[in-house]
Image (cartoon, rainbow, N blue to C red; front, side, top):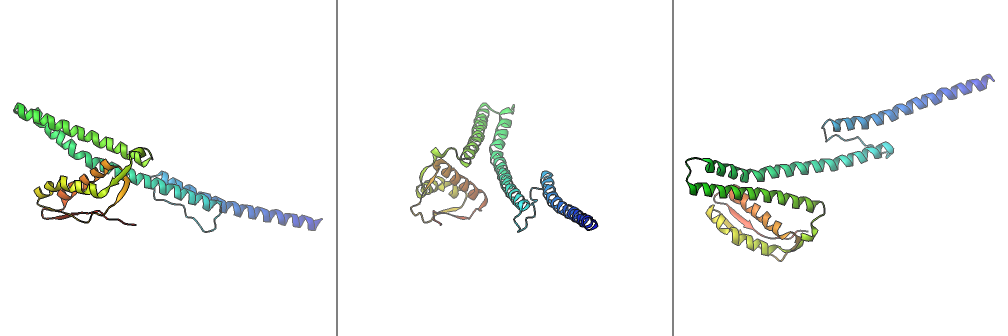
Length: 223
């Protein structure tokens, strides 16, 4: 009887010790995940759970959480880039609109100047509204909507059209536009947006490339 009692006491003590140790280990792993979640909630989106190579349930939870945060961070960066782009694109038409309205409100302005300023303000407002429409189209495309607008786009034809249309703009800026190789390349895309992208390229080149820049427009294929 005494031997049974001693053995029973040893089993209970050992079980308690193992239970306490296992509970401490599980609590530590859970605390690490909770601590990371608190850092993320506090605004540190780059925080990640340390995942070991064991592949236990806590590691799988941590890996899933890290993957989720990677996707969220990518979405946040995309939203930040979109906001910056919108602010950059809207600055110009809003500046035009303000300047035109100030001219129209000048009591000393002639009727001709006032009418011209009002037309400029109207054109600037239409341009700003078009930017918002473009953003909606982009959002639809990224979400998988608007695929009915995608067609076969002949890129060399678009490039030649851009070169012919914007050639005088480069000459006025003292720059030289060179049309390079234009191999036959056809893609599935949105043709009006392709022309708009070319227009943005032209604007950046004229504004930032310098007075004596040599600007090359070409189409090439990569894997």
